[in-house]
Length: 264
Ligand SMILES: [Zn+2]
Ligand SMILES: [Zn+2]
Image (cartoon, rainbow, N blue to C red; front, top):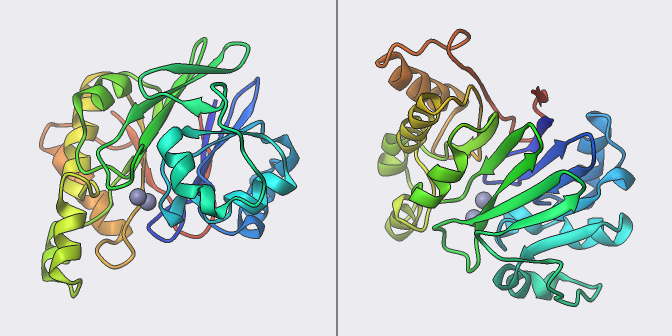
């Protein structure tokens, strides 16, 4: 399996998962041309995307979806509420049949031996969820856009082989930054995003459960930096004697270009 962030951050998100049986795109949050360029850059033909899974209807996850899915027809999956949230964007009608409507907590079979499980996320978009990709011997997860890590999310994530996990904001940068007060409250609230500290705590629990490969993603452009995200998480782990490169692998996803694939 390969986990390949194409771009990641509050400006736009798309992640490619390559398996022996199928190629999955999670989110299509930039224009179609940018998605196609990124796919080409990592050596995947856009025609070879078998399924697109949408986490939620915020623009940084769906802005290129309509054009991409028309140009490169593949199966589109989302929760019913997410479909409703993005329906205005569709120029191609999508009949919401049970085979494409995702129900959180359930697994959907995409190809023989390849399943995707949706888990609800606490986030301010109706029907928001994250996805776990499951093959016969490998698992990975894309886990962004959530105010906190619920028990369901943590139990799905425990022991997975690789994860792209949100490390959205540095608490000090958010508090002392110039965002309006109500936006600060939204970001830090239960329906907002994971801070670097929240991410560090989740990564520690995942290392305890046997997970070793991490990509930090969905960084805020204004309230975070690559260095702060990485230092916060790795610094926290060091207090538990976990050493990067020895006990775990960790990179930070690029905002505007593909991040080297995690192969496992
Ligand atoms: Zn987002
Ligand atoms: Zn969002």
